[in-house]
Length: 192
Image (cartoon, rainbow, N blue to C red; front, side, top):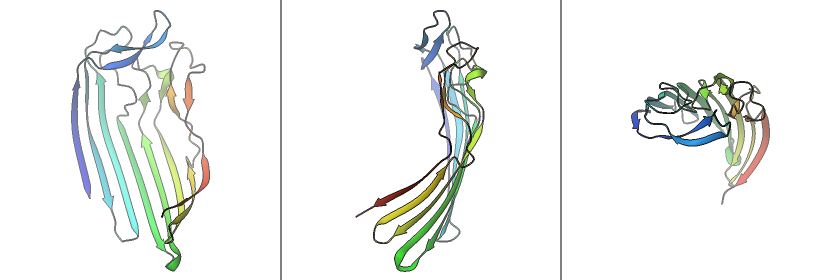
């Protein structure tokens, strides 16, 4: 199965967070003027057997600030948290275990292009492209319970989920939030 979505959005008076370099007051909300967002999203699903499933997604995004009267952001700047390219891949295999239930094995990978956390597009608080691997093995019993062992961010990738350059180009000081490091765990659930 293949799903395709093509979209275009034309914003007027888009409200955004912007920096105040004149007062050094941090972030405040302002009307950004115009913004154009367009792109394509693809979703692909394949099940070659009743035990094996593959999924893949891809997105192209062109999100730019248009004509505006902001003092700190220029026309053509990329909107915040808007990667130009992103994709994901996943594979899942189900192995029946007789009366006991099923063993489920899954691996997935997600990747995103460079993003900016601020409309001014400062490089010091930009997040370069990165990808994350996740693995999961689960025993699903016919009796309704599941026991799963999982690993997230298998390669222990360093990345930010938020950053703000409060020094206006000098350093991030304490204004960034790191993404989760490699994590593993065991979870159990029961459905009745």
